[in-house]
Image (cartoon, rainbow, N blue to C red; front, side, top):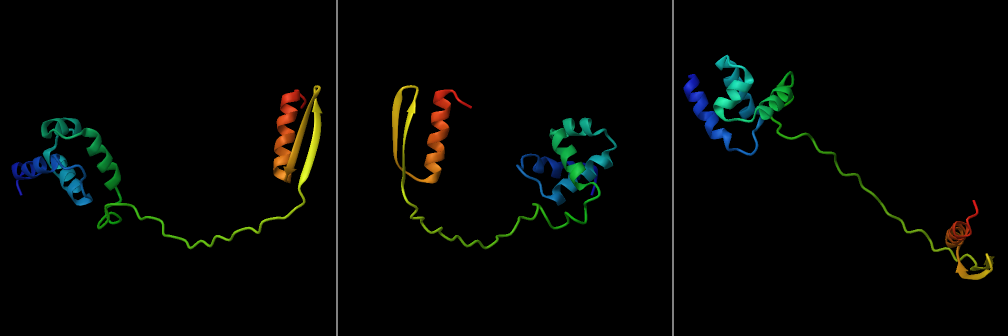
Length: 128
């Protein structure tokens, strides 16, 4: 195929949002056959030079690996079993605290909410 025919095919590819590896290979081969620097070829063909650089790097040395692929392989699914934790019937706690003259009553606390309340009260009282 002559250079003019190759460039005509590239004009058709110019509007494509994505190139396959074989289309990109075709464009890069046409560029190399032209003997022009990449920037000059890209400007003349109205192609993005970054697109050419990206494909050049991607295909360099990876041609057999990309022969039939256009996307990297995706990870597979792994089966997951979700088990509900039994509800703890721990005894309810209550606390009465006096912070700087203010009486604070906390009722029906579990261990997590008691720890949270203690942290809040320490912060309010300014104690470390």
